[in-house]
Amino acid sequence: MPTKIQGEVPVLMSGAGHDAMAISQLTKVGMLFVRCRGGISHSPDELVLDDDVGRLVLPSSISLTNM
Image (cartoon, rainbow, N blue to C red; front, side, top):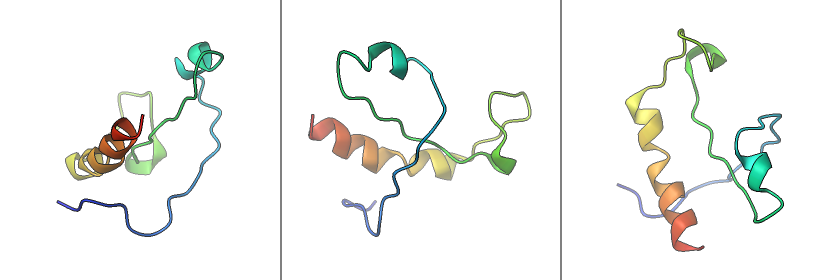
C-alpha cells in the first residue's frame, strides 16, 4: 500500500450539505468523495467499488494524522 499521495489532489466545490454544514461554524470541514458508477448517488442504483473505497484509506489516514 502506498504511504504518500502522488500527483495533484483536486479541490472540488460541492453543493453537498450533509452534516458538514451544521458543524462548519465550529471547525474546518473536509469531505472525501468516492466515485460511483455513472455518478449516481443517494439511490438504490448507486454502486461503489471496493477498490475505490480502498483509495480513501491513505488520504483519510493522512488527514487524521495531521489534525
